[in-house]
Image (cartoon, rainbow, N blue to C red; front, side):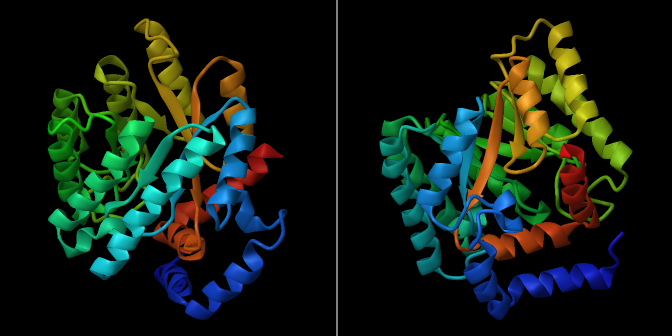
Length: 311
């Protein structure tokens, strides 16, 4: 386990501009670099090539242009513009049309209205090309505002937008009630953020129990749910629940991270399941990667275990 000092060190490393410059220069320099195992690249062209390889393996994808927690209106507008700029090259490349994004990247810290209008701009540009846009869930202070923005836009007719729910949070069963009632598409995750006991389950067994319960309900009641997990026991439980309730393999999908458990991804595809890979890219890959490692001690060991499992 990492102690508090070690986790703080990861956060400090993520903020280091000097290390970020070094990482940008060397971390993606070699096709065999460690970073490229988990990050598709710094440019959209690199991400598209990574997606081609993903799709050649029978998988689908969602593209995530990395960035979050912008501090100014100009940065938020630039991020929205960057997402709009992704659309036509993706269409021209002939790859799948699926995006993921974070609302703090679109200015949520500056106000809900700013983030909502930037998301609306992206959805308006994406709709004619048939894109689906998933709004990622960030840590608990943003849960309610994220849900509210997605619900508002969905109610206006933007049915090509979905949301993410985190089983670790105590509130998620109630949140599932509200999004299912509105027909909003859900990606279910365990949750990567360290949250206090009054907000989230602290024990893995409790999180797993919540995930299994919510997963079963999504399979029965959800609109094409996405089950995002690398946990083989939960995947087996999902397969059993779907078979028991007569839910076809075309009515849901599994989702996994780029570079994590590629063996498991391939095995599921070989058995006729749909698997979507979350493909992150962009120049902000270093702080993203370091923060993900530092958010929870389990993330460090999870990456190491996944590498060992494939071997």
